[in-house]
Length: 118
Image 1 (tube, rainbow, N blue to C red):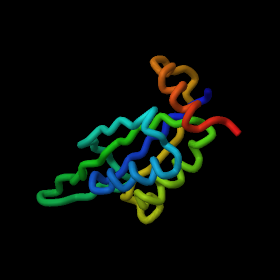
Image 2 (cartoon, rainbow, N blue to C red):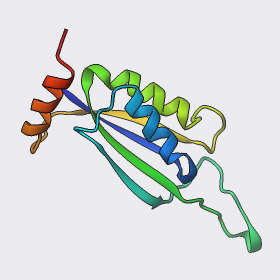
Image 3 (cartoon, rainbow, N blue to C red):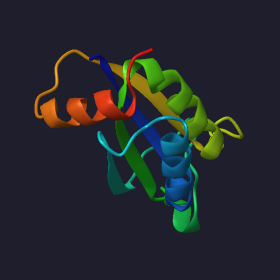
């Protein structure tokens, strides 16, 4: 079974919305998601606040391990739910190939029963 790793960088208040959309699009609970809160990053231009200090809003990094055949739908759903194309500051989502993953034998059994290949 082939897998992809989706990484979604989004404002913390959109985390649940993105996770719900990803699950509805085919990211099953069997492979799950890892959520990293309070991530910070820098955009194209600094957002300066008091005394010229740069403001970096807290973000969430959502890691979703998904079957390759479902990854495109899940990535699109996460992008829409996170409103990632609305402005420069809304976040990004990307997809990485997973060349090898361990600890998934039981997950694959569940996925094969719940979502058999057509």
